[in-house]
Length: 137
Length: 137
Length: 137
Length: 137
View 1 (spheres, rainbow over the protein chains, first blue to last red):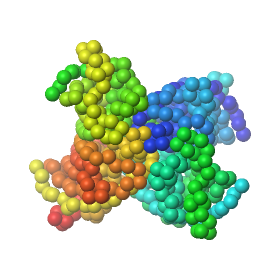
View 2 (cartoon, each protein chain N blue to C red):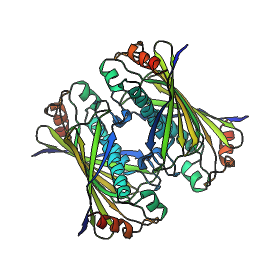
View 3 (cartoon, chains in turn yellow, orange, blue, purple):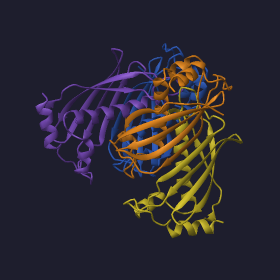
View 4 (tube, one colour):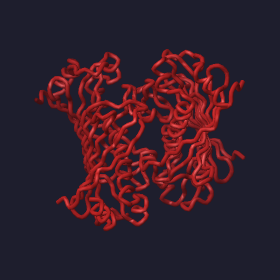
């Protein structure tokens, strides 16, 4: 069940030297961190602070992550992350992010998070996140 | 086309403090690094050194990565990584790793790598890797 | 021998979730990566691209790093990195970076890098980096 | 005030691929994580679990870290970490770790940690850690 489609959100990152590997490219693990930054930036853009969410007792651990790598990025490249979101049921959201460099799609990742309480029990995605999502459509 | 099924390979890791996050669990990005370690360890177990492979001009960048997270790991947990491999065509291999803690499957990841030359052109998986794979079945 | 004092350079970073640890703070290892980003940003500000430097055959590996941590940063904090540089002899530069959050000095690090060739032999800091340094004073 | 000198403790690590950078060496930030692993391993060796320490309400954040890099390590290198400890006053410990590869000292780091409560207030290093330290001399 998809109850809302999110607005497209853009964010840029610059590949850090520490993220390069000896192949001369951004290590594939760095993308996982960028996608996380894109999710948090997306939430900020719709008016929700992930930090405040956790402080209010709602956590959103990742339950699934898929990334397809098409074209490598290099240290110092500036990449544009385009993120869209779909809400799947009352407690899950999926974020799809395209990593683009100089107009070329270099990678695409989809990450699903599940809202849980501090004790790890499933909980509903907060109403204000859903409302912000609705308002932005 | 799957031309060989690899032997099951076991490796253990201990969750590093730096890999924990403020949720109190191993960050989901750490698993990507563990799966890489499991791949390299798998190659070592069948007699192939990934370092030597790169020195000979064969690189194996990741082209796809999917991880499902079922149960969180914590700092200091010792996890067992069980890896099996399938060869898909002449230049691709897929590694599936189960991350297990105290007998419980905590996560499962599949990573596909593509053999390429230093210039990034597709190349065949080296014959000795395939032979080692065959010999171990 | 200090032959030039660099201009003060400012850069901001936002603490990533992956950089938090289970103590609830930015892991002390993250600062090492931020200081590197500050160095590269400093070079960019004086007109030098570290990426271009490496492509021209000059590498600047770290030979010493000291960081004092005074006040912890948290996930999502925006920190200001203030960097000054001194050139020590023909092949070494030291970068001192203050990590500041909401006007408070939270950490201070000094990193010394040595210019080397691809083969690892000491070489001089490129003249244009020195010239840029001089011009900015 | 140094009230105890710790036993020498050895641990080995293997450089991970993700820890390599485009210079072809282990990134200098990786050593920070290794030193942390060496500290936690040292504590384990004297009978103290850092995880249990935190669960009991004693945290040991890093207050200062200095690393000197002499010879680079590469991906897949197996390094030996030799750690000694000194206790400085009632609430601070300093760990000095030599990173050795094939008998050669490649780096040396000293990290000082301060015992604090969950609320961040200074506290004493637990008596059993000190006793274990004494017993091992």
